[in-house]
Image (tube, rainbow, N blue to C red; front, side, top):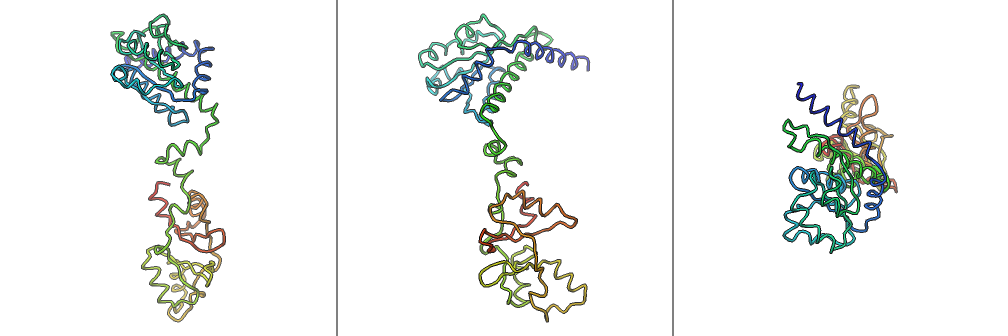
Length: 318
């Protein structure tokens, strides 16, 4: 426990010192990346390379086109991905990595702008850079003062800070985030519409108001939605019959075979429009004393085009 606390204290102290070093170079770096007409290429060897990969992933998912290039692969052709309109960010603890130094002449010839993230302001990589973001590290948290720990933490935080500052400059909104994260719950909540999830076509349980009780029961059973929309000849919604409506009639001693559909149906059902967000349908279903399981779906001409079931919303991760 003492060792764990020591490591955390050292890394926290590193970040405190890093915060004190934030100055004009950081603003210059953000504005250079923001104005970049190409992409951001992050590179680094070893643990620094792992941090570079993470920063590239964060940037690309928050509105800044970015990618990772392994410097060793860059020495053997991958530097060809770089263009004069790009910004290359190299992360290095020593600033003297052979693989990164080997790329510097090519970077200069290509004409890409170059940012170095390193604790060593006088290193070879720093001298080559257009902008140097110094990450001062007194010592690593490693008991041998060798394994990159405090240095990689500092580089990671610098990368996160650049990415978040760029998000603000780009006015990156939740809808943008959802666009880049369609598999996450936020993405689904902001992107999926009722039309993406509803049961339509042959899967949509629907009957005319003059249909027989037998046809109504067959439609409810065959479509497995536990309900059926009742429509007029122009497909306008007249009512909804659910399993609950049928049970309610039976509990009151009603003779269902002798009744008409219009006598059983709910004549004022709640519905949603086809172009509404799916999350809105979910909120309508859940935010009441007795939650709905189904909602008829209407287009903007007020015609029934589908049905949405609570189970379908849950199955899609909403």
